[in-house]
Length: 163
Image (cartoon, rainbow, N blue to C red):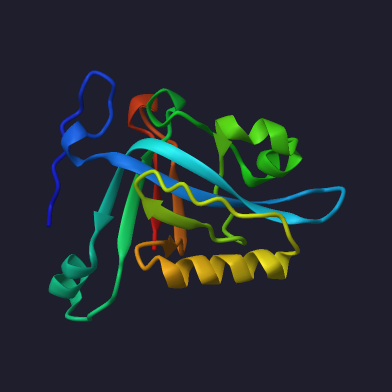
């Protein structure tokens, strides 16, 4: 499927194809070494369920494949993207305006504004919480790939996440 997106005044995806998405990003407290997945809701993203298109192109059947396009501009998504290093350096109570993607700690993601909150625990305990959450919610995906497209016009910069 080829999707043609016309650039509009805010340089965002058309409202007819966008939705909020929820991404849960791991945060590790530097003093206690406790972990938590922080719930980040991003506005006006394009969630493309593309498992059928992969089948048509390659003949290989895959399940629950998603390509997620996230505008890089805080004015569109509602949160500022920061590097994983900047994320970890912030105090926990300041994270609500930010989000990140750490390739070493692949986050969970879901289409829409999902209200699920994780609780603090060891790395293993939080991973157990993730597995249980994914088992109970088949629409939740674990990201597998991240591509920062921060070149060209600021208005067209975006992030591509695949699951």
